[in-house]
Length: 601
Ligand code: ADP
Image: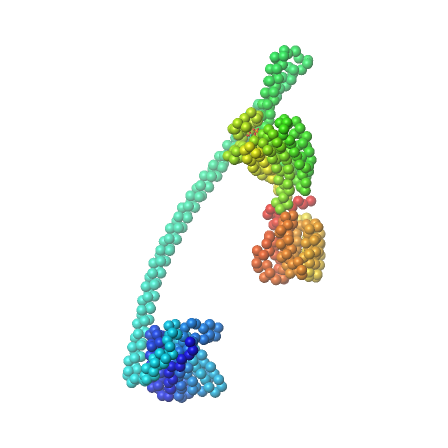
């Protein structure tokens, strides 16, 4: 809408102030302002009129309906504005502008424009949006009616003032009542919330008590289970020892009877003696297995880790397995390990584990292949040893149970295969002693794969404590002065330092020989620090290297996820260089403490 000028009035004497006040109110009412808003507008205008008249003499007052305009930082609204412009004012001093200050509160828009010798004051109040739809002609008609209004007698004006005051008072009272009502409501709600909170706390407390009781019971059960398990191991060990002596004696006596120096036996006697001896040997095997298991379970069996070449273990397995009976149509394939680092483990226990699994494979594979393979995972620093066969397989519901003592699968295909049901529980215990885990995948009729995963280094011997030895550290920073100084400090601490002035050189050096830690500036020309981090993260062999990010701009690293990997941040401006050896060690330490145990000399 364009502006529609409505009324012009002149304020020459005191009575005119009353007249324009009344016009402002009536016009506001005609254009849809609520009564309180009418009063505010009228009061603002009469206040401005009264003060200016006293100072500057006659004034001109123009009423208009205009579109709203932006005001200061505030955007314009969609609503039209009933605007009042007061002109005819001489130069306004700051004191006057200050005096008019409180008037601003009564209107939506207020501006004092000083232009040398003259001053223009505009004020406005938003009208309902529907006013925008009223045609200028209609507005003018409304204005005509109001233009004729003059001030009443002072008594009438006083009465009107009083009426307005009363109306305002009533409104204030109404608002106060409303406020009181809301307060009561709020209080009630509050009480409700407090009650609910208490109920919830009580419930939580009760649940908590339940959980504590449950834990206590669980602890007690655990103790009982532990005691039972210890008793079982003790029994197994004692019984085995007791059994072994007589069985060994029986075997010895059989051999004595068979010796050429003994009285010759009849063929029948020799046959029976053979049976006695083979039964006794079977019994001895079982007793030995029981004893092994009891020892492993009791915690008396400890691993003696040494640097172990997996290839040598595989070779000895090939030799041992020659004696193990198997079907003629089953092939044993032991694939030499490739790209697997030297393991820090107990080769004797590891050989027993693999021997058990391979023997089982051969036992339960009437036709096909039993295969042993090794695979290294640099990310996890583990080696997976898989024994897979194409044999009869194990039904899913038995996958956990076959690791229980004496459990054997009851199935037609498993029938007729001799065994004790002690091999797998023993194997699993050994794997645990070696710090690894064992898993099984199997499909009946198609075969099974047992996978043993072992850490490359022995966790018990890896540096869980502080790293004190020298490190190989790479510094990537294009700030020559900083890099040189940092390198000097680290070298003084005994470290080997490789320097790189840009990201490309850093990556090349890291790939050539992975360092123990990297100090990395983020703002590098070309391949920047973020790109170096991304390259390290995406490379399985390099992703474990601890990185200390160097930055003089902490805002660069405010967005931690952008760093994309576990890193330490060092603020160049805040940290003194002499703390560098400690920071590097802490970073390497944290990383080692997490998942990636690095072999140290
Ligand atoms: P044993 O072989 O002396 O019976 P184990 O504890 O080694 O005892 O194995 C338990 C059972 O698990 C075996 O009796 C057999 O039913 C099942 N089993 C183990 N290995 C295999 C395999 N490779 N294929 C099929 N079944 C297997």
